[in-house]
Length: 126
Image (cartoon, rainbow, N blue to C red; front, side, top):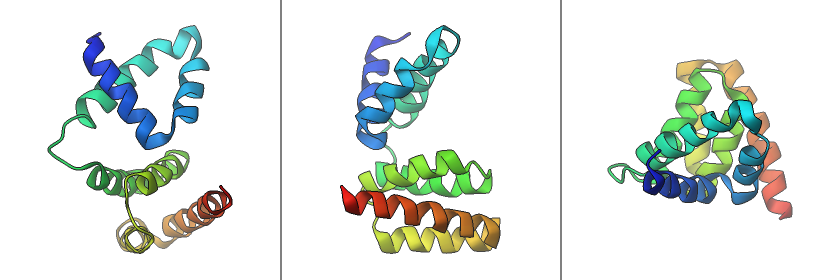
């Protein structure tokens, strides 16, 4: 493992997804999935997200559309929060969901709206 890339990835992962979520994911990985969490942190977050060619806001927008297309709604909600953390506005998020409706289907967009509504409610309480 490249410790510098891992450390960079860990910092980015916590900034985007929240330290509590990341700390819990790492702590709950256990022996079986621990190596996988290291791989994600080093390469996904340190290597890809750490590449400054694309701004984090753009990466968040891309992730929302890809995750919707793959119907990975748990991850979609996680990255919706990340998109908010990365400065994607409500209007931009609404437009992204509209784009998802056209290219991925209305049922997926309905689910995105349901998830977004719940997350907005949580964020407004905080």
